[in-house]
Image 1: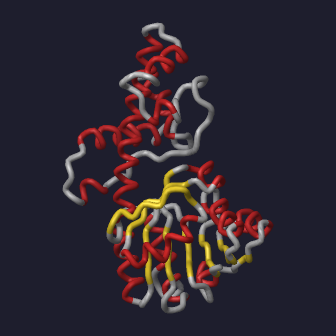
Image 2: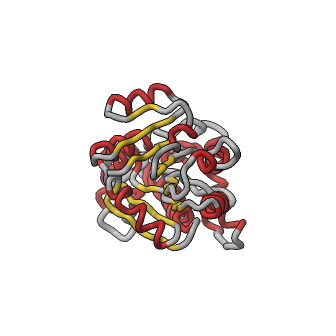
Image 3: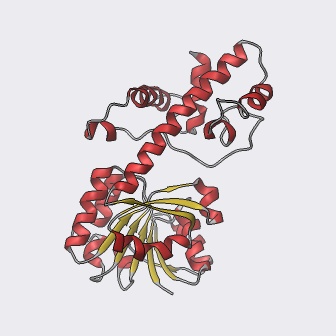
Length: 280
């Protein structure tokens, strides 16, 4: 069994760390939230006083952080994870971040004699708790093979997407499809409401017809047809432009979500954009 450091044990990272403990691994954890750390300690983890301390004296470090800026800050610099870790340490970053940051940090890790994969997830909090996450893993084949047994303790589908950053590329593309399809589902339900069609009737028809999609059947944005589902993100800003891709629908969806989060959606779930569409 491995000795693992885990940085970022919040809503997603916490259940993932607990699943590593259930698989028999030894886990040191760090998070800015003392409550999050305490929940993991209750499950058998060891608390670390800092991110660097969590990366010291272990063979593997897993991270789950909110943004690319956080990943750069935590990994790089004299007090970062790379500086604190032993040569040969394997890093598994499960954050959903931009491709450029993932590739930059992996390059620094490799230059320091370590291995690293970017392994963003799909499946939400429910999947994290159940150990059924899908991991989209970018990195060298050797790094992927080293990471796979650890990821299998936290997920059901482990997919090697190619070189460094490709896990993030896959996640961003998936998120774009999700964000676009959610807008379409919301607009269709609002139109159905205005035409006098009940939510359940609309769902019963479309869920078995050509309009069927995950945003409808697993995360229907109106109350009734589907129970509450795991969280899901909207399209990642800036990624397509940085690589010269033409994504007109993605841009249109992103503009709508930006309008939404600048107002009533600031602290709401992305599916709540149906309320903004209903008012427009």
